[in-house]
Image 1 (spheres, rainbow, N blue to C red):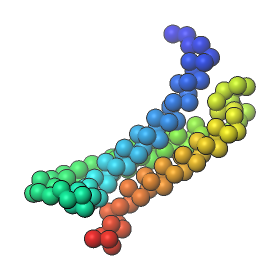
Image 2 (tube, rainbow, N blue to C red):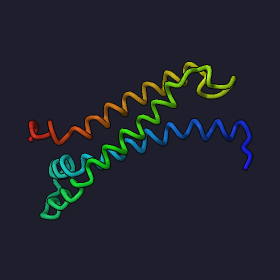
Image 3 (cartoon, helix red, strand yellow):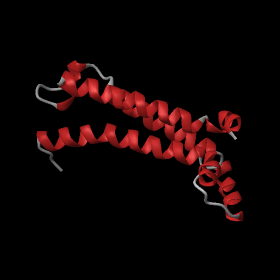
Image 4 (tube, rainbow, N blue to C red):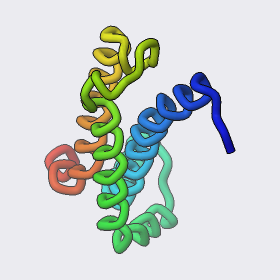
Length: 125
């Protein structure tokens, strides 16, 4: 299957965005066992079913692995040398590269907070 240049550019641009979004969702999954019940209680939602959210705890290492893989891929796409970008591609524009770096580091910090929430959330309970 042959792709035109513009179709390939769009696919390459979306791949780093999708990996960042996927990393955030995986980080939320990794923190669901610990931060999830607290957030629900703070919102006024209670019930005995909240204790079942700890069922995701055995899958926590898998979620963390997915976070690391997706953010590594996104970082590789965002920080690749500008010489690897063809003239006119989105990754060759300095303003777009700078904006993507800001979004990447903000979402990486957010994912870090989600993944490590079971270690620091007890201080706020």
